[in-house]
Length: 362
Image (cartoon, rainbow, N blue to C red; front, top):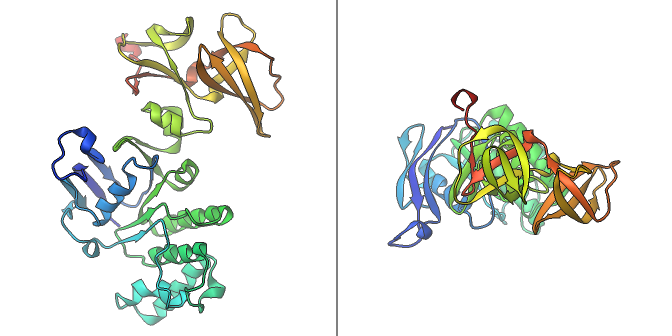
């Protein structure tokens, strides 16, 4: 296990990058705590796999350093980093049995035969392949082969870090849930530093202690699932986390009041004067339908009943807004008014969250 430090790290696939737009990974300075489970979350092309490959040693960064427990490993090959990596598509030895595939990393390091047998049996049970241990990998389904890859990544207990690059893409939905659960159990039992790349927010939020959200080559927020939900530090985080994601509305802010679609929205806290692109973010859970004409006028476009609640799709001055209401709550037809729970409001300037002024300084 290791603390992983990214120091002034950046990477470009161009030989002579001339500006930010040429960098697939823009400058990062982060510490990844020893023994924690992280999820790297973001849309395709945001830099997740690039960062993972730098950590694993498959890629040397254009600039900056990467340290394991304060030891510089920037130029060190993968073999010297003592990590295990599982890729998006299965990598197995087709001519070997499932047992031999799982045992290979241990045997390659001269582990005791009794320990190898015991550990292989444990991992086979975790991935649901005990009955197939003596089968050749050739001819197995893609999801079975990926389970072997996962098992081979997990079989060693002495690694500095376990790295997973969208490992459940080819796994069926029910098995995804089971394997995520097993990965969590493995982490709790052995305390490996784990980094799990995904574009699926459910995978990220259910697996990780800390979620690292990436956008356009940058880490825009690192936090617990609760922190990402309640206080998205960037509008992309609000949009990407949650189903539906956070509503983001054009606004102006004057002290303790925001103005949205020409109506005053009380904020409950004072904000400094803001210029440029100013927006109000509020999650659908904090949007209320009201008959109070002092609210913001809205048109109901459609209602989606998802069983446990209803999602009301609204239009406010040409901007789409979602509201989540209780299953039993009535929905007016046509037009309505909406209000926002102050506890769920965040203010953004140029896409970044703005803190309110502390009352003592107001």
